Image (cartoon, rainbow, N blue to C red; front, side, top):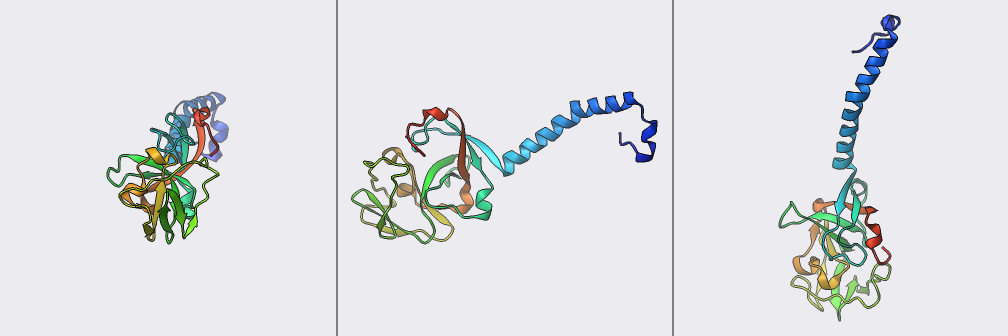
Amino acid sequence: LFIPIDQEEQVSTGQKIIFTLLFLIFGLPILTLVSLVIIYLFIFQPVQIKGQAMAPNYVDGQYYLIDKITYRSINPARGDVVIFKSFQNPDINYIKRIIAIPGDTVSLQNRNVFINNEELNESSYLNGNMQTYDGAFLGDGQKITVPDDNYFVFGDNRVDSSDSREWGFIHKKDIIGKLTLCYYQCSLSVTKK
């Protein structure tokens, strides 16, 4: 179907119309599908929030996009909300907030979170009366240092979240991406993010 340049005069208007229609019917949908697959695999991926571990900021039934490229050039930061593969079952993804980055010392004291011996200010995403209970991995008064290429994560709903307090660190290689844009059921959120 390629038309040599020196023979273009010999192509009729009808042939050009047929070629254009064939491209629109077959070529354009294939190009669109390939583009969507590339975007899904390498750039953005849709995700639905399930459960209440991140409530009230991110609640059951909301739909977000995961940014899959940012962490290829920069490291996750404290406060980022990330999606990562479960170390117990790689088919399951979790959503949590990064509380501590590699090299940080994490501790719980009287239900308050301390990073590098300073109380963590979480007022931008938690209300003032949120208390953080200890778990099997991080007990009250215990200090833990985050190893290289690992992160310590909590759910925003500290009472109803299984997170690093129970099962420890997550490895950078298990992080799928950063939670970004809400695109459906966004009004279910009741506080600022």
